Image (cartoon, rainbow, N blue to C red):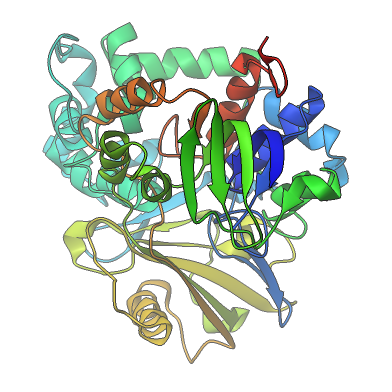
Length: 454
């Protein structure tokens, strides 16, 4: 049996970043990954001149942490900046026409009625909600502050597109803490947005980026800079057990033991592994829902698509009854995503409001094409088409999520040497994963195998 001080399980971005940071501190953690490649849902594929990301498609950079990591990994020359047109985002209106989101929405009936626009403008005079009240859904928050039409035509498609979620079920303080904080701090979303915009100009704005070979370049670079014997691919963890001061791990390639065990996994997978050892903890983890999401890549000759594709992409409100959640204009967003004279679109289907379980890739591709053909003016069949199905895609920060996470960590602390990481806490964005890994390593207390806690 091999004995380790620290074992990290899960080579997604969180687990890889945590392992990298530990190694930077001289802690030679061993990283186990069940799959044959690293990255979790960060998957990039280059085929027939098209470059597609099967999961997340872009990385938002704020502050210094991600730039520092990219610099340490020597990836600066691999970074590609988003097209400035990415600031332009479309939403489908009630007549089925794409409308660019922005200040002009307040001066046009293309998306919102006159009464809804007046309701938006009156937001600064709406009373703030007492903080002592119970958790509030995103839908209730938006209806209260911005009105029902803003929820239907602006926020619901955003929540579906970003979280694959249902705003009626998601907690505003857990999923969109910035919105809740804006009301708490300023009493108004509009006032807070203006203040933050002025502050943002002073502090420096965020950047939307990817890499020349797609987003999977980041986890691959992290993996490449770990010592070869510190990363074990295709090594699933089948069982774990606490024995005295040690964790005992069973894998098909042999058993392991360690003092510190870090599970950087989806909540349901951590629950499976902990069910025998900590059933109450496992039940709390298992209660976190992950809906299925499919990404469908479609490539066409440029002349086969009427829409100018002059933006980030298009979101589709659920009210319209269209299955596709939205579509990214991938070849506009980043360079060299499609061959010359071609365009690449990436559609998203599924989520909490549309069950796609049991649907085949061919069915999902056909559905995406049928939905987008009239919206974007597509003629003919795609020259390139691929579908990636994620049965458990994005964790849902449901009502009571913050309290559930607190209970999870209360129960975790009863199991000495166990740490739990993953995007089911702290935010679902890629940058949030790196922030979480960095915070973990900063509070990590190194344990010496021979002498115990130092």
